[in-house]
Length: 307
Image 1 (spheres, one colour):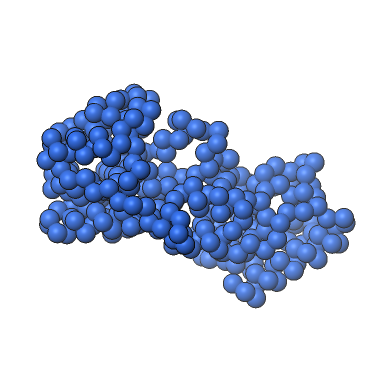
Image 2 (cartoon, one colour; image 1 turned 90 degrees about the vertical axis):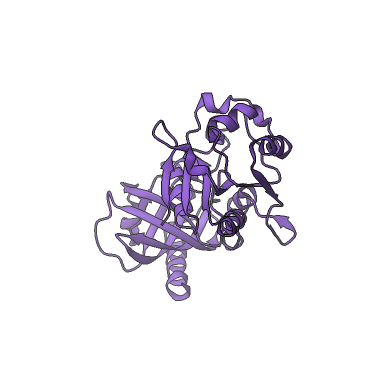
């Protein structure tokens, strides 16, 4: 596991010397991101230097576009996943209003404080500084003066299209969990703490753990999914309802309701990680409770037999 360094008053910028940095937000740490990180590792090995994932403490769109942002993971999860890759270190820049308003030149000075890496790996569409005014051209000019090398890469492509967080978010919104997982190179997951729900599940014979997921982290489209749920290090097969339960829409809120197969116990207050694998059906309103129960039991049976 790589060490995570936060850039504050105690951070020594000499850490960047002879390093190879992959610079980005890395929401999702998907296949495209992993390619960029691998390039930083490659040049670090060649130079006998340090490979660094250079990122921000928050997604900049949390500042600029908070209403429309749908993140693939929390900031803490993103940093932890970066640290679990093969880079030597993760360096985290504080994305403050003052930092975001810096000119491209001042942005680079604040980031590196004159201690430039040997290689800086970015996507060819990398933008930085106030109003995203800096491009790879400005980055190259700065690097030429400072003695660094800029490695601008084409985005990793799959099926003729770039692998991006935006592409994965669109797949998730459509419920195409299988394709999203393929581009992520892992199951898409949500995490949360179990809170009291409406209670209908227990009355109908299938208790559910109710997770309240912030809107910014609800990239997955409404529907019923087959998943694995992890509680206290133990994984359970799960049937998961994402979104508003249409049959109870008059008293429901958008949420994530998880039925853990073969679990017996109290989950209130427990932390759960839900890894989504298969889309089972859309959300719909049932004509009567018997139809609802039969459909949910069918979903649970599918999960039991196919996961």
